[in-house]
Image (cartoon, rainbow, N blue to C red; front, side):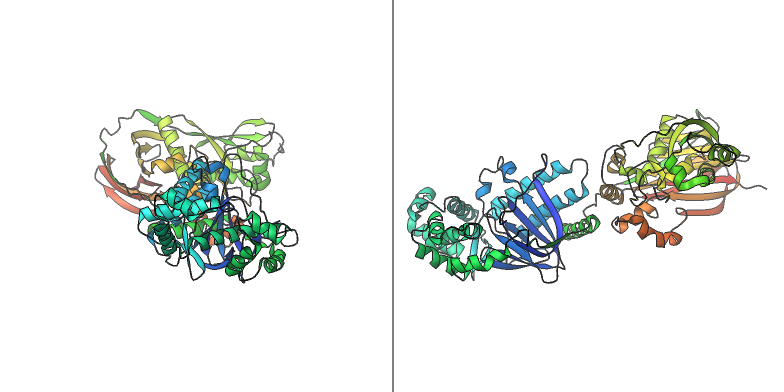
Amino acid sequence: MLLEKTSYSNDFPLQIRVMQVKDYPLHYHQDIELVYVLEGEINLRSGYCTYQLHEGDLFCNNGHEVHSISSESGNNVICSIKISNSFFTQYFPKLSHSSYRTYSKVPHDEKFDTLRRYYLTILHDYLKQNFDYKKQCIYQMNELIKYLNKYFNLFSVSDKVVVGFESSNQITIDRISRIIDYIYANYADKITLQNLSEAEHLSPFYLSHLIHEYTGMSFRDFLCFARAERSEISLLETDKKISAIAKESGFSTTAYYKKYFEQWFGHSPEEHRVLCRPEISGPDHQGVMTDVPLSRAIALTQEKLSLITSQDVSSSRISKSKLDLDISGHGETSTSLCPVFLVNITEEDYEVLGNSIPSLLSELFGHAEVRVTIPDSLPNNEEGLASLLRSRGFTIASSRTQSGPRTVVPHYGNDTCMAPIQVLKNYLFGMSDEIRVQLRDQGEPGLMFKGQPGCLTSGCSRKTLFYGHQLLSLMEGDLLSLGPNHAVMKLSSDRPTYMALVMNYDEKSERLMETSSTVYLAYDAISGCMDELEANLSFPVEPGTYYTVRYLINDASSVFGLMGKIGFPEAAHDVLNPFRRLMPSDHKSETGLFSFPGTANLNFDLHGVGVEVVVLRLKEE
């Protein structure tokens, strides 16, 4: 079928596809299509012209224009965005009669870079699909169409190639745009230069000169060009006689129609029908088009957008903060810390981890109090999970009947280093001793990140949340100082031990824990936070020499950060497995011996989202 029907979802009037194309057969659609070459090159035929489009070129197929795409190698990546005329005509009533031409022989014109930026922003938002991406895409498309109307709703012909219009005179641009709009809307009717001149309040002579100067064609040639171009659909889609097509296209005679059709297409209408019908899209000619993986599409889009904007799309203004805090009142505490962990083990956890669960919990929580809930369907014998847990000192809180899977809205902040920050904040500021813990994400191990609050991925890779809970398990003692970005505590131990931590994050990262998002949006939010926090904490300690451990939790060395750097490939665990032994077993840590005369002075320097911790433990004499 020559007509390619386009379907849209009820709340999203755009159809977007990123693909590699070797052969996209002849077709047309009623709506406007914008084609952007992200990589490689293609041959795009529209009407009588065939354009060789290169990386960065953006081409507009207006409604009712017959076109096709081809590439000998298929080594390309293009994006197609189709625009619902029925939706956007509420904002742009003349949209269905538009004649946008975005092909230019001057590709570095500033107008084209602006148009590319609008386009790539829409594509970027669509691919990332944050919680309000549809609203953002529609808004940006409105802005793009406004820009098309202002600068690209007109064209000229240079060496028989239809190209974008070149003029710096806005009055002329507006006037030629109105004329072209009128001709394409009424091409089948009788249109005279006199009618147009009266509408534009110009003399016929001056208007004729203006049209010829800026379009490269006389008024008569331009009108016949539009009529010949629009006739192609009837010619290829129907078996109507050539004389009938000539008449319905506005030509006074069949001979006149044949003359102008051959002038533009290079052969007669009859020959065009014979030559092109085998190239029409249909059951026997569906073309060769392959969708591009989402991770690659996002990477290409970000690369092109950053080149245009001269900065990374996820960059933001850097906020530099400084915290100088002198904590006095050693021994005067108002809050005691004693976290209790409530761990829920599922049948799926046991199927994957088996009897290694007790060892894993010991490593995760150390000597903290842990209460475990397990399904009553698990074996209850000396070698069963319950017995093994009790032998390690864990309390079995209860057994329960395994329930069916719950539908959980994914919050991909759970996979990032914002998750341990949120857990620490919830405990320190909420001061509820009980902390609920999900051991691992549920579901198919092949999908690495699911936006679930597990300490491990489904495939049992450690997330930053694992280290956040591990840090919490040490916090038994007295809280000496607490603020939005810091905490200092004296830990319960056989000899003086102190912990100080500093947290850095921004509003966008914090929102990840509250709203549904995508894994790509979460990565952008975390990696895009360039905020810096310099903190100097002073607090009293018992004089002496201390073992010190400085520990950093961020996404730089996390499994999430690693996968983000390579674009979250499909079958992520298959990609990760060869690198497991090369990955750090822990996050960045430093150890040393330092003497303090009675006051500890600690400096922290955090860049981006993360938690930095220092633990001081008095050395035995």
